Image (cartoon, rainbow, N blue to C red; front, side, top):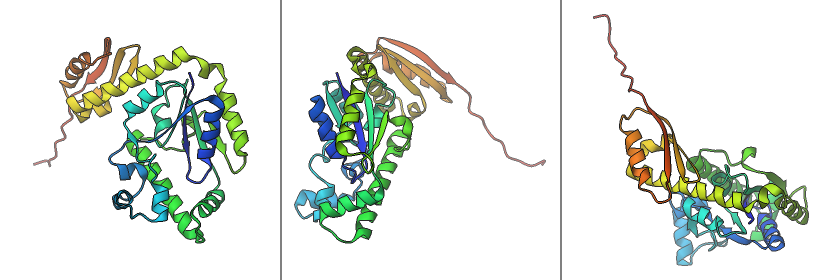
Length: 278
């Protein structure tokens, strides 16, 4: 079982690297941006741009920005279920963050110098004004970064997210493909039983969190939730005296939850009084 998650900068030949790895290892490529608030937000474009695309009136550049693959939107739970299919390469914003605590999943970032990205995009789009291309690349990068912060509270360039970072401005694409394929042969990434178990735990954790935030309330967002072989662990501090009991009650009714280790502690709210000496 091989699962690879890959993110790339716009204009870095990331699609070429992914295609080479998939062909070499026999993987299915899944292209999707993990769903955030809406399609436009997940793509980093204006809602009006998506509307023009759907109406057939988008410009050449807008049609390049929004291809049909990117219009696919998956929730975190759906992405995890796709990973369970075996032998997949998942590309898109947030995939690395979603799998960051599953060491058996190979996490890759493809990057390139701005000069290379600009040149490649100018060739692809057939434009001559480098300022316009640079502006769009920077806007894309900013949208991706804001999405990562909002969805996962992390910086997408954090090196701890990745097992390997490859710069296509310094390393030829075939060498990048070979490096990733060589990494996939490491025993850590060939332990299929451990991979399946870890993804199942992550899936259960994600499902429990989603249900509890909806059923119990947004205060659950401050509680750490983890899963180990069907055992759910709650950890955190709350000022709500009933949160601990409510969270456990709802969690016990979720399919796949076999046991609960409830470490939620309640502390009283601190009241602040203002006044003079009288």
